[in-house]
Amino acid sequence: MVEGEDPGVQLAGGPAEPHAPGGVGEQPEHRRGDVARVRGGAGVEVDGPLHRRAFAQAGDGEVRPVVGDMAQSGLPSQSFDLVWSEGALYNIGIENALRLCHGLLRPGGYLAFTDAVWRRENAPPEVKASFDLDYPTMGKIPDVLATIDRTGFSLVGHFTLPDEAWWDDFYTPMEQRIAELRAKHAADAEALAVLDRLAQEPEMHRRHSDYYAYEFFVARRPT
Image 1 (cartoon, rainbow, N blue to C red):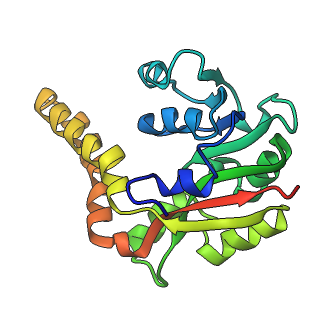
Image 2 (tube, one colour):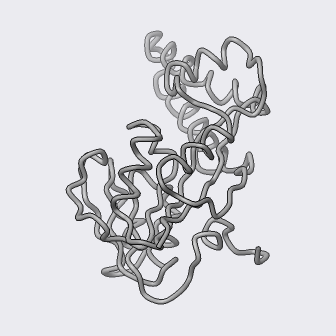
Image 3 (cartoon, rainbow, N blue to C red):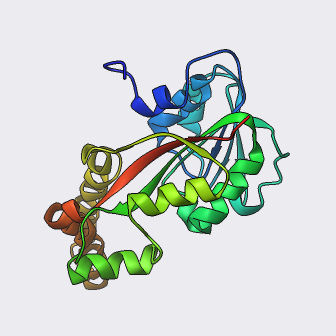
């Protein structure tokens, strides 16, 4: 790895000659420019809510946002050299998602994605209940590696995202917004109760983050 460069970008083989990158699902705002530039070409993103400011920062013509169902994107098969998705593929089932991405990639193309994984056994009840609600089929790293192999990919590499990735892009701004809304709705007991429930998630992460993590995987469709 090259110090100071994004390890996911390095594993995905960029930057290189002009190619066609694509994103499936929501990407963190700061990533969009990286995805557009990692293979040096124009890209398409199938997304939920679109952060147009981030797309503008990626450069004119580098990213074409598309709002749609990532399980039925309508994109032509074998049309991308790179598919990049962070924290989204599990929504349609990780095995189903990897097969979909395999079909979108040209032979020799790369898939870069993150997936939540268990790091320890016997998670506390509140942690287990939280993930059972959102991601009941969540597995361990070996489970994802087996799925990568089963769906026709070869593994390039993987690494655990640092805990800062949870805080910088999500929990810190979330807690700041909760504080603002608590001040704004201080006289509204119902609103405060909702905010109290939302605040439990970052607090749970503070106490129990050693039980789970996001793992970044890079795989390649064989030539």
